Length: 216
Image (cartoon, rainbow, N blue to C red; front, side, top):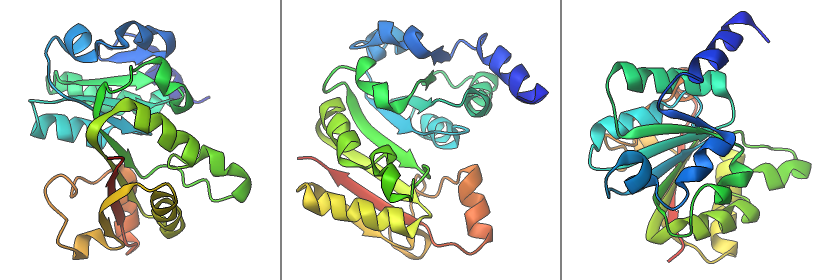
């Protein structure tokens, strides 16, 4: 592991807005009142990477609480540090494996989920690792309050198609679907937030896919 990664791992141990592994379990069922000290809605960004979406949405919507979730601490470091430097208090980062998410939230505790440019896991043998595979969708169904939305942004056309098919197969409600977000009517201020990877894809003239769906 490089010196920079080691330094970042050591630094996030000191960050007040980062909870690692078991440390986050104490707030299960009380993220808003126990951690954020309010009764505002809770929004998750899964596989948040550097946390661009988490932090930018927190700035846009101070009336909501945002939690970025990822296992790679050296990436979380960037978003957490930015939030601390800019005094964005309605944001937290949780360093866990997303497979264990039900250990950290009670059913119906989450108002909305964002999945921004996750690893598409294109190999057939790794379907269960895809963040919109049936086993993950089942977890989200438990986490979300009735009427809660899931948002997916991806540059990967295959992953977009796969998710679209799972939405149909499992009888979910599809609200928005586009294969070219920035040439559609949906590119509002929130959807125009660009992550590190998205900026890279756009420079390569890659189209950006977007899906919005729910369980109810």
